[in-house]
Image 1 (cartoon, rainbow over the protein chains, first blue to last red):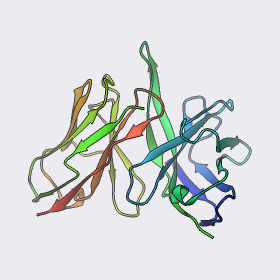
Image 2: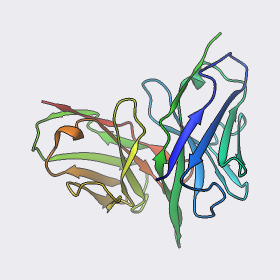
Image 3: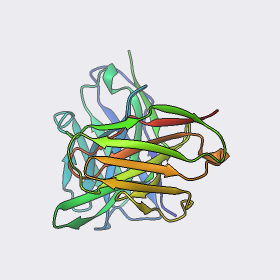
Length: 126
Length: 107
């Protein structure tokens, strides 16, 4: 059974960097079959995809966050991580990590998220 | 970005009812749509991918249909454990985007 678990500080000061780690069990982040993603949900708002990282280090970021977001993978620990710099109150959210899987076709690549971590609440406040 | 609009945002129903939730995309996404269920404080759970493919282990009372810009999730006979929130996600282009969610409540 594949499980993902987020970890990191629950409180971050404005202008600082938010750092989260996702620990994967039951699957390998070095697999070429999946992407490893971050999704967040601010209070009262819809889910927002943040980024994914592939086993070879290639990444894809949401343009709305690209200038402030970095994701990385640590194969030795079977983990992947997220950093969001210069945070503001707008970055307060439940942050989820998820495995992104799908397939390629002539039209491109489609993916969906399964499974997800339980989520971790991050509050940006002084 | 592709905007995903779900309707209704909430609904009341009874055990045994047939329920349909709609998701509309701001432009065509083929059949590249997924549906999730989320219970309070829990991780979202994949129900359906590529419009109509039931994820392993998901009860057959859940089904999906549609293409292009209009999609539906149907629960053929609501069970007590189905009263929760559902949302859609387009897998056609980046950034991936989600619907605003539909909360199914007990009537």
